Image 1 (tube, rainbow, N blue to C red):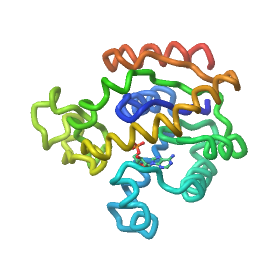
Image 2: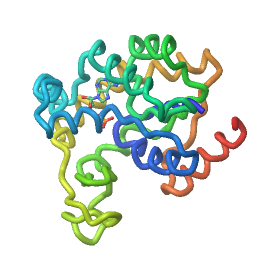
Image 3: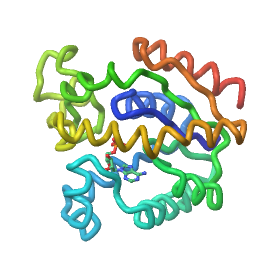
Image 4: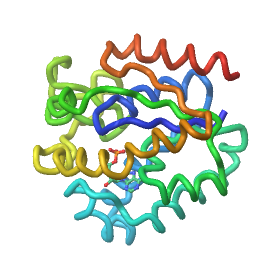
Length: 209
Ligand code: AMP
């Protein structure tokens, strides 16, 4: 299966991606994680995009498309992939059609108004890349899954979150219609507990297997 996860920042794409990837044995490819790893390692790509990402804007399309194209050409993607955070606009979606058109696009729906607090209270794990909300974990510094160090993403501050929502509405939201027209779009209700959202996704994917 070639799966794309669509959804606004904070809709739970990363959390669901972990589970889907485990259950269906698909490589989880998160462009956000790839970029953050590059920033942490201070690679040329990381240095180029750090400010853009911290501010909540999108990295350049040509660079992002090249990274994803290369990643999808690796052997672990030969039976499918799970893309989390790509494509983010129509240019990227058109490019993906040429080197790995998705068979299912899962759209996690949730009103933007419900997402701001999810993001500003988010803690991310340096090690397993999981994300958690401070309201639901005992220790705000330690990952409840792997024990790794938790950090606050630079783009989870209120200013950057506002920009990310604006970018999402203008550039990413149109992909819902784009994939609807291609008959590969499946929407699930993201305003439910994590297990229930996952249940809805599994229901969709089981029918497609
Ligand atoms: P995410 O972890 O998916 O929320 O992504 C974090 C940030 O990485 C985004 O706000 C963008 O700055 C950048 N990013 C991730 N995926 C893409 C993409 N497909 N195109 C451009 N920028 C991206």
